[in-house]
Amino acid sequence: MDEIEIPQYFICPISLQIMKDPVTAVTGITYDRESIEQWLKTSKDTTCPVTKKALPSDSDLTPNHTLWRLIQAWSAANASNGMDLIPTPKTPVSKSRVVKLIRDFGVPSLYVNALEKMEVLAKDNERNRKCLEEAGVPKAVILLLITCHRQGKISCLEQALRILLLIWTPCSEIKALVNQNCDFIDCLTWILLCETENPVIVRTHVMVILKRVIEVTNSRLLEKLKPEFFKQMLRVLKSKTSQQATKSALHILIQTCLWGRNKSKMMDANVIFELIEFELEKPEKHVTELIINLLAHLCSCADGRAQFLGHAGSIAMVAKRILRVSPATDDRAVQILKSISKYAATKDVLVEMLKVGAVTKLCMVMQADCAAYVKEKARGILRLHSNLWNGSPCIAVYLLTRYQR
Image (cartoon, rainbow, N blue to C red; front, side, top):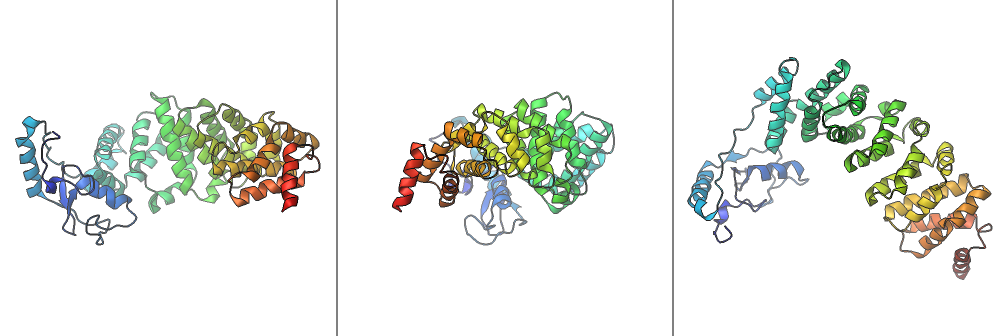
C-alpha cells in the first residue's frame, strides 16, 4: 500500500489521512468530519486550520458527496493493492431520537436498552457525543444514577458511568444540578460500596467522575461533605484500585481540604498516617507530588502537624523526597518542614530533623538550582534553629556562606 500514490485532495489537512466522511466548512476547505469536529471542540482559537479565517464552533459542515464517491471509487479500484474500502458514512443521530431514549429512562423495562443504545452512539463519534450533550443526556444520566441510589438498584451502573464519562462537560446546567444538594456526591460514594460485576472499572469510573464533580461544586456543599465521604476516599487509596482512581482520590482530597472543617474530618479518618504509609511504598512521581502537596495542606493546622509527627517515618520520608521528585515537590516538602519547625519544634523533633537528614537537605536546597522562594523558606528554617543545629557540618557551611555575603 505504501507504493500507491494517493491523490492529495483525498487527504484531510488535519489528520493527514484519507477522508472517510469529507465535509466542507464555510471557508471552502474540506476536512474529514471527525477531525474538524474535534478541532472545533478543543481548539481555543476557532479558526480554519488552512485559511486561518474565523470558523465558529457551531459552523455548518456540508457533506461533500462528490468527493466521497471519488474516494470510494478510488479505494475500490485499489483494493487489490491492499487499500481498504471506505465505508458509507453513518447517518447523524437526530435530537428527537435521543430525546426518545431519555424518555425510556423512566420505563423500568426500557431503560437498560436505552442505555445500551446511548453508549453505542457516544462511542461512535464526536458528532454524536455533541448531540447527546445538547439533548440533555448528561443531566438525564445523573438523575438516573441518583434514582438507582435511592432505589438500591445496581444494574447498568457501569454503562451509565461510561456514558457520563464520554459526554461530561461542565456546562451551566450540570453545575446547577450538581450544586442543588449533595445527592449526586452521595450517589457516587454509594456506588463505591456496591458489589458490581467489574468493581475495578466501576470504581475507577466513579473516582474520575467524582473528581470532575468536585471541581464544579460550590464551597457551600464542599463544607457539608460527610465524614463517610473522606473514609471512602481513604479506602480507595488503601485498596489501590487503579492508578487513575488513586490520583483522582488525591486530587479530591486536595480540593476539599481547603473548605470548612474538612481537614478535621480527614484527621478523624487518619488520612495523614495512611498517606505516609502509601508514600513509603514509593509510588510513581506524580502520585508522590500529590501526596506531598496534600500533606503540606494538612500540616497547616495543629492537629495535622500532631498526626504527622505521630508517624515515626514522617520527617525522614519528606526529607528524602526533596530534590528527588520535582520542583513542585521540593516546594511543598520544604513547606511541611517549615510548618513543623515553626509551630511544633520540640527539641526531640529538631534532633530528629538533624538525625534523619532533613537539615542536610535544607542546606542542599540552598546550593541547588531551586526557585528563590523555596531557598528563602529553607534559609528561614536553618536560621530559626541554627543554634541547636550548629554541630552539623552542613550548618557550618551554611553559616560560612551567610557571613561571606
